[in-house]
Each structure stands twice: as structure tokens, then as C-alpha cells.
Image (cartoon, rainbow, N blue to C red; front, side, top):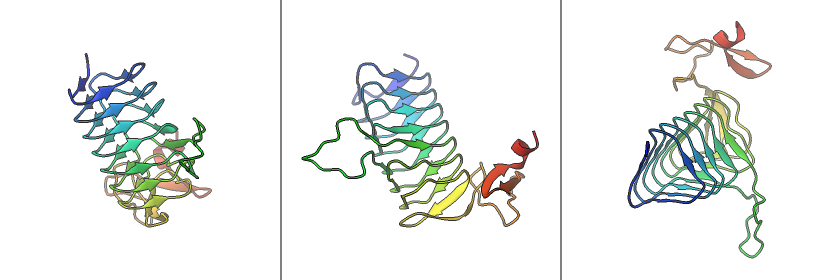
Length: 189
């Protein structure tokens, strides 16, 4: 194997796991899921049926990623962050595979104990603060805080908060076009 799975974890049939990925203690990866290269799944992570996790994702302890969720490259899921996949769950009225889709964009970070309500997408390099509850789509590079989560500014790809001129200490520059943030380098190409 070109990846590591701790002996206490379970990997169902029909699962693909990329080279260099590490799956630690007490994890369960369910049927039909795909985990990319160089990912890390901490202790007690559950990956639901047919979930797609792209290369370079870091999923901390006690995270469950349910069917309908897609993580793009280099997503960070903090400890105990929560995804849902049904808006109106009832034990006596199961939905039988009719799950709402949630996409987490490349490079996004989800803080510890945050909740992402299903059917909402999180943009590229967005940052969701610890304990926040996402109840609507999140734009690229947005900094979201609170319950419900609301935008409190913008963040750079590197994770630092942008100043009023949409510049970062690291040297990256951004521009707002029709209320959407884009890297200046991407616009000028």
C-alpha cells in the first residue's frame, strides 16, 4: 500500500485512497468514497458513502463527512466540525439517499466545532471561524463568524485577514469585482 491505515480503522469495499494519505485511529471510510493523495484523517473520522475528498485535505479528530459532501484540494476541517446532509431529518421518515449537496472550495478552512448546514457551498480559501454555523453560501476568500455565520471581512490564500485595500502582509493583492473577490494576478492574466 502507498498509504497508511491504522489497524483500528475500517475501510469498506469500493474505496479509493491516494498515495501518501494517512488514516489514523478508529476511522471508518464507507463504500464508494474517494480520498485523494497526501490527506490526513485524524482519530475517529467518519467518511460517508460516496464522499469525495481531494488531494491534500487535513481532517482533524471527530469529524463526520456525510454523503453529499465534496472537499476540494487542501481543505482543512478543524476538530469536531460538523456537516449535515438532510435539512429536515426524522427518524421515522428516512430520506433514502436524497441528500443535499455541499461543496467546500479549494483551500478553505473550517474551524473547530463549526457546523455547515447542507445545501450550501463554501468558496475557495474561505475561512469559517470556530463554532460558527454556516446557513448560506460563502463567497471565495470570505471570513465568516458567528451563529448564524456572517461575513466579517476577507482573508488571503495564506489565511491572514486582508486590510481595507484588499492587500495581505504576504504580498498578495486582491480586487473586488461585482462584489466577488479575486486575486489581482488571476485578473491580469
